[in-house]
Image (tube, rainbow, N blue to C red; front, side, top):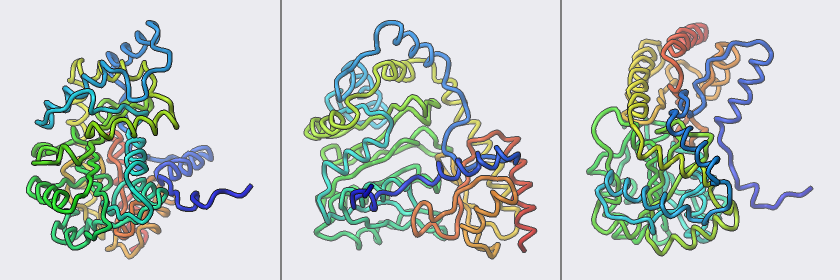
Length: 388
């Protein structure tokens, strides 16, 4: 069967490929420590589960509106208004099965063939994949290890052309754990206004901050009319399998984005939306506990890696990933990640999985127990010593 040519432009998310490889090794008897997958290792809080079960028992088992249930849209808008310091209503919100559809739908709705899209590199691999799939031209904004993965606004300004249609930003960033400082965010907002660029602001890790406070580009003058916030419940409330995300956008985008939803997924499951509303309204203790636990794990893994010869690991300010350079080991990032899995029993991701500027680094997720992270550090140290 001959696939359509466009399928050649569609990438993948390497984390799931490595997870499958690691599972095969486990099936053969290997002991693998999983630091490859970006999923909180906590169960969804019980009050949220109970809300989902109650919704199922109370008839929330039918089709709903493509943009989402109005009461849930309204509640999300209220939460976003409070946390971002902006004024939005439920009419600005589209609820989707996970956050990825907001990326996909926004790019499909706005990017014409040949339009240039600025995006972070290294960055979440689906950005580049979706840009290519839609026929756009990816324009990587370099996040370099020597700058501790901080964005260079002047460099970005020099990349803008008359064909630049969209800018994707992600703070805190996957895979680097870096954030966009407020002054840089404001400068990017200035560039967007001056050059008529739409901004897709991926804020899925906004609650995973270990210092400072979260800033959204939407808080700057004129940006509410040209920015889309992407957020969801998967990370903050350990709801990855529930598939519940949302976009907050200018009202004129809601109908076309919802129409893309109608044509692809029809709607987001109603019971998951009711569970999500409980996530917002219910106790936040467990959500804050998850962040504090990740803070402890971050310190353990960063300090431990920096004691291993040949590895340099910046301290991430957010998310639950680290992106250390392994160039000092004499191995490429691909050799390091593959060897560490096969010989050391630790699953990680080669930096180039997140774009060409990720070469020389690997990504570890510290969404695993402190005990397992300590064990992983011992294995990494042993693996590196065997190669030096």
